[in-house]
Image (cartoon, rainbow, N blue to C red; front, side, top):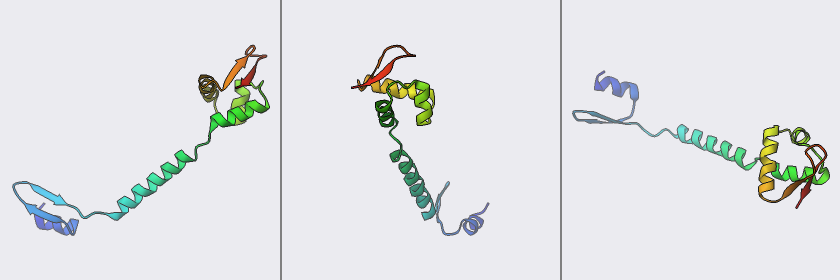
Length: 109
């Protein structure tokens, strides 16, 4: 493709002739708007994230004998997530399991 054809197709660009070509395209503001929109959307999702650990502590305050399956159903999360948050709360020494798996209860500290 010849230089004139490129200029006609690409519009207002800077053109420098050497033994290689360097083309500088004008800045497109729509790209920046899209980037900002995506950034804001992601930020809102992250900052509005619910505090599942806090919800779990409140749930166990009211009913300390709940099983992992019951906690998961009430908070609408998987049992893997329940296990994850219970382990985090145990590591932080905020809860402790007393008794057996079937007949035990959670003690808040």
